[in-house]
Amino acid sequence: MKIAILSRNKKLYSTRRLVEACEQHGHEPMVVDVLRSYMNIASSKPEAHFKGEELPDFDAVIPRIGASVTFYGTAVLRQFEMMGSFPLNESVAISRSRDKLRSLQLLSRKGIGLPQTGFAHNPDDIQDLITMVGGTPLVVKLLEGTQGIGVVLAETKKAAESVIEAFMGLKVNILVQEYIKEANGADIRCLVVGNKVVAAMKRQAQVGEFRSNLHRGGSASLIKITPAERATAIKAAKVMGLNVAGVDILRSQRGPLVMEVNSSPGLEGIEKATGKDVASMIVEFIEKNARPHKTRTRGKG
Ligand code: ADP
Image 1 (cartoon, rainbow, N blue to C red):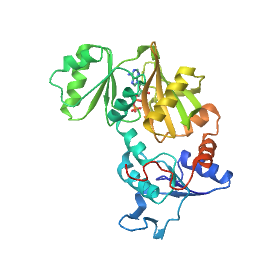
Image 2: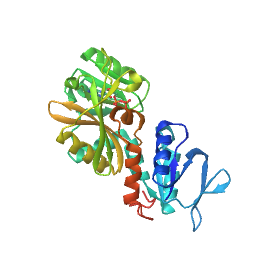
Image 3: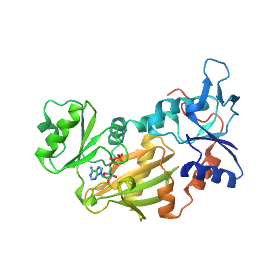
């Protein structure tokens, strides 16, 4: 099969591993930098070009679209969908997953366990917002944050008010969330491919830190997940419409709580922590499922 990997950089671990896995399985991979590709939309035959050449009709496309290029990246992916390529994750599902509020609303509608979460832009009554999520300690999150930046633990009501006020002054959207203390600074990343969790790792925060992000000094290790965690991760990916997803879960007294569903999960941490060849599992999923014009939305989303 001809397989496009939409990625900004060939040298990134995940991109390299996907190229390798495609080659090992006898396919022809091509890394396409989304920002440098351009498209003809108003034509009876949609086309995509890259470096002056028309791109071939790919059998499948693996999107590795970073959060900062979601808008253009999903447009390029949509073009491939219109051309009949099978997308590993559909453009609509990626856009949906990038909107944290929309994602949480969808997950909650389908009864998936979530931490008590409030969201606000410019609340008149901060006290009420705090009460709404069960009081302190609580976590305040900048909606646009990644890698744990903009995630603050407020232990007291006074601290919570100050942090919320500070964020309000910046005119940004925030999430106010119940703090899951019993997670003990750890979260679980479940890598879902199709309807299976193919690998799972525990990320543990450094001593004195509650954020387990590897970028914040957290460490990753192999973990055995419970049937409830497995079922939650699979359902969360399904609700989001993602074939491949990284589902982040907190272990709480009331069972698994989903924090986030990531549509372009990195492979480095999880492959190294588990020793599993996730890239090959992704390619094998494509082999089983790729058919021309099989996108549900065919770019309509
Ligand atoms: P980002 O998307 O920037 O990584 P997260 O929402 O995943 O931000 O939060 C970063 C880390 O903080 C998580 O990996 C987790 O360890 C911790 N964390 C986030 N929310 C909570 C919460 N409600 N209760 C306990 N720990 C949390």
